[in-house]
Length: 442
Image (cartoon, rainbow, N blue to C red):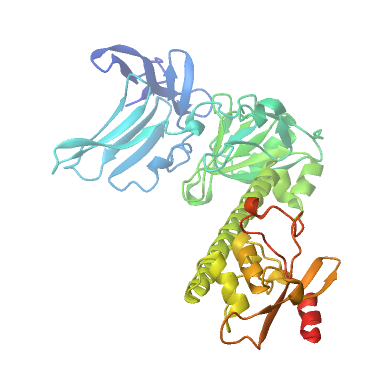
């Protein structure tokens, strides 16, 4: 199948249906490209849609789906008469079929006998990097990277604005001037080889001889082995723009391609401090994004922990307050002035403030303070300072001979003559210094 007869030029290929329901001839074909370095191409009329990559002795370099398949055997034959690719099932009871649907998707199906249906084994193209020329000349498409397109060492984006918008179809251009005599080669590993219709091939050369041929030809941009089995053999080199290269992970396959670079790029790439940045111009931005995301995540966790800590402390304070059995503002004030061993909430309990200087300063409502000082009687007045008058407070029952506390009436923006009806519960701030002074007086 997919056979090209050299003498007559007759070609056998697969054509799609016109539609899913119309078996007439469609616009998509799957056939052998025999010019240069042979490979199989999916066409939409006269436009290349995707390609298999060149045969490397094991599989097509751009079809990792063929790697590790144990139920069938693939082979590629090229002789003086024919060029063709074929496969056969290793299990005679198993069946497979290869079709191209009306949308141009190549599909391989395997018959599942127990379930009695055709199971899709793989399909192609399967992602953006399978599309022909996705990253343009000298661009490398990597579906495992974001963005997918990158430039090879010694190259930069041709259209930087489009590149930043993730349109890599314009490809890359050289950033360093070549000097044929001093140029070198850098390996690009695990790739689908460039489009091969204009490649030059020689099955009798080894890789070292291929390198010399390419180096002596100042127009040669890259070279590679034709066959990667048995240590490698054959030579393919490109004296044209390198188009439609794809990067694969180690486990996926591909093969090594050797790219011509200037002497300066060769030295920079071999330097440990610059190799990564020269090989992929987008690495720095990716690292910055990762670091920024990590910092943002840590900050979010810290904020959540702080909120939980705050809520926990608030809950503990509420429990402590509830244990005193005092819930009403006036009851708390009277308990503070008239009773013994009362835990009184501070201003922070009312307003959620966390100023440590205010932890021991109680809040008293006006009615309780008036009662404790006999309506601010002159007989209970001890003196007057910058913050207002100072009174002594006596218990109202059994402990008349015992002085409990002294309250100063520092009022917020008010004096003793304030209209109490409009301020039913005035907040009086107690100062430690006053407590100390009054205790000495009494």
